[in-house]
Amino acid sequence: MRNVSSSFPVLDALKLLLEAGCDVNAVNNEGNTPLHLAVTLKPSNERVHIFTNMLKVLFDGGAHHDFVNNDGETPMAIAQTDEARMILSSEKRKLDLKCISAGAVKKFGIPYSGVVPKTLEKYIRMH
Image (cartoon, rainbow, N blue to C red; front, side, top):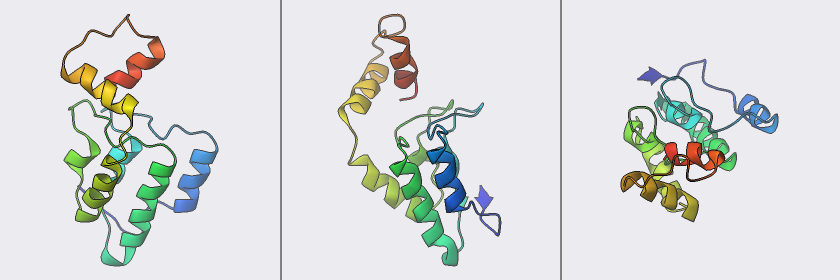
């Protein structure tokens, strides 16, 4: 994946984007969220603290660790470092009922399109 160098994301810029209303769970054409992309970074030893703080900012902003991309992969499945996997594991313990419910709907193939409100359809699809 990508190696983190001097172009490592700036935490203040990330915080500013989130405070300005950017969707922390927005997806690109591959269905990746900012969290999916962040966990593919490989920070140098001297930048690991910036990396872990960046993940904390994403989680504090409402990032979902259980959203899947177009390949059906969660951030944990594509995490490139032990630090990322450790942080994702600690967040996994905080899974809430609506995430568990959405995951169950997908896992068991329960029809939901046209049954639940449109706002929930996207949410279920992301799990």
